Amino acid sequence: MSIIKTKNILERLDFLVRMRSTGCAGDLADQMGLSERTLFNYLNELKDLGAPLFWSRQENSYVYGENGKIEIGFKSTEKY
Image 1 (cartoon, rainbow, N blue to C red):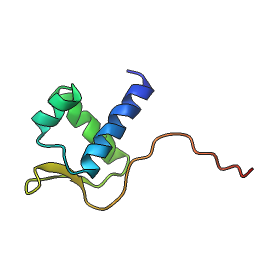
Image 2 (spheres, rainbow, N blue to C red):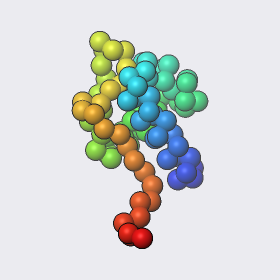
Image 3 (cartoon, rainbow, N blue to C red):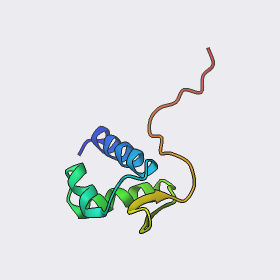
Image 4 (cartoon, helix red, strand yellow):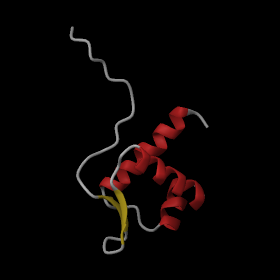
């Protein structure tokens, strides 16, 4: 899989988590067009990137334990 496709999937997951609208793992995997196993791999990638991700039974969604978002990409540090 290309890094761009992985980036897009992680960004979409990040958005759904921030909106607290993932639903259960099975529903989220279906929505994303992924198997549950692959979905869990991506959720673990978010955790590996430092996201304080957990399942909220009360909200029926994966959520972050604090406000924030995943950012993947190039950011220039040059001042013009």
